[in-house]
Length: 274
Image 1 (cartoon, helix red, strand yellow):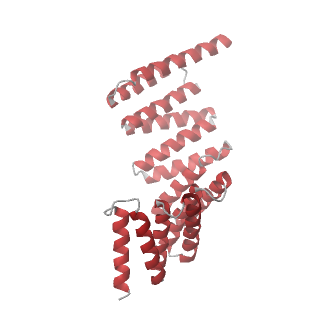
Image 2 (cartoon, helix red, strand yellow; image 1 turned 90 degrees about the vertical axis):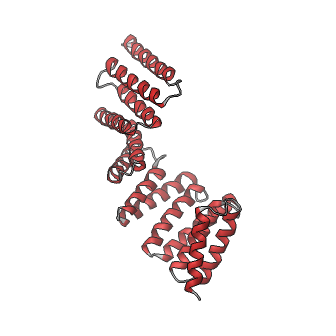
Image 3 (cartoon, one colour; image 1 turned 135 degrees about the vertical axis):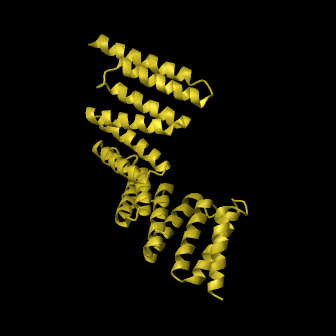
């Protein structure tokens, strides 16, 4: 048994070394060919029930994605995911499901991305691994918001916020980011009080972590301005738009999209109050 295990380990080492040698070529097409050769060799030397084959399919998916061959990456990830689930490899399945969700999200395949985000979160939870919860829950919430499912969006943003606080404490950029995103969602729902509270919380964290002059601080100021503008608190809106513009100008070109958006909102505000 020890000899067989050693042989398997040696085969895996040889395959991985050969893949890296082939990937030294600068061409993305060559990287794609290397991934295909690696996968075919793994399918030849490892049985269908081998965790090594699951790993090989995942690696092939990684290389295909990095090389721009996204349809093949999706196929490899799905194959690896299915095999990992059949073998009971929960941690590996969670990782691959997350990669699949992120890629599908990037491609705009929202329904499939939502399904795999949810699957990956369930698998990570089963594996007692919450290190990816914040990212996955936040991304899932954003998709659910676009799909019009605000209840699910709110639930997953709150889950992301709870995880971020548990992992990092109350004062951390990731906590501020989730507060910001949930605040934007509440703004779009017209819940001004919750939106203001979350953006104020994000602003306080960002000022404490980064200081008063930082692009993330400007983002929070701008989002608060939108809340006040939308709720007809025009004086506060003007003050926060102005502060956001001043802060952004320290870091961005005068024609940056964020600045153009702020100037347009400020112009609308002035027209509404004259």
